[in-house]
Image (cartoon, rainbow, N blue to C red; front, side, top):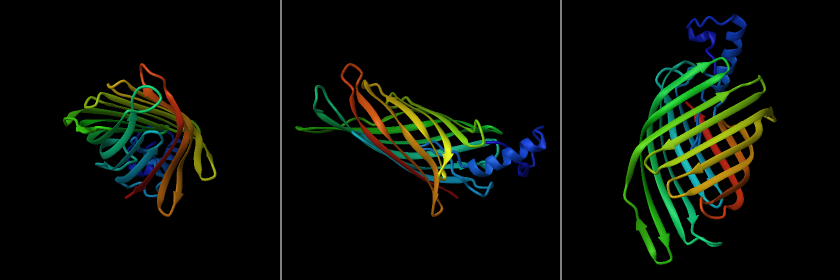
Length: 257
């Protein structure tokens, strides 16, 4: 995202560059990451300061996240931001062809950081505490694992290589569960959204691995809300075992306030 002329902050850019940046800001001032769940919102008011979001990724494993992102000043300017989120997930684990247990996870985090706004896009860096609790369920019963706390690092880039394209990169690292998640995507403006390929990877200290490839449609507007829909193929399993292929479907919804 770029600084628009309405910010009143001289950045030395030529007038035309500032006009282009300002248009980009008005459209992408609500850039988010999603939990697993962050996406930019095409908002008309450059003074917006908060975004509510919710997302779901479903496949052999599922995970949902909801939360809010708040800027201390405005989303179209450099400045501090806060991201608060909570989520839950479930996945099947085990050896051989059949899973032998179900792992259920609850996860919450409160992150603070800074966003750097440029004419070509926005870079956001966040860090803060996270808490998680897991339950393992087998045919013989369920076991609740101890509460874990740690530090989460979150970095994202939303860039406009050209006027009609969008490229994103997101990386999340957490010490509580010893996990990592990342996603790359590219899109071209078609049919009211940015449509293109995406790839994602996640892993944790248990040896679990998942990677996926698919297509996404981002920033589709309907009734005051914005949507991101994705679908494709994923492979998941333990690092020392055979990865199981299967389809996945993702949906994110957000609203700028």
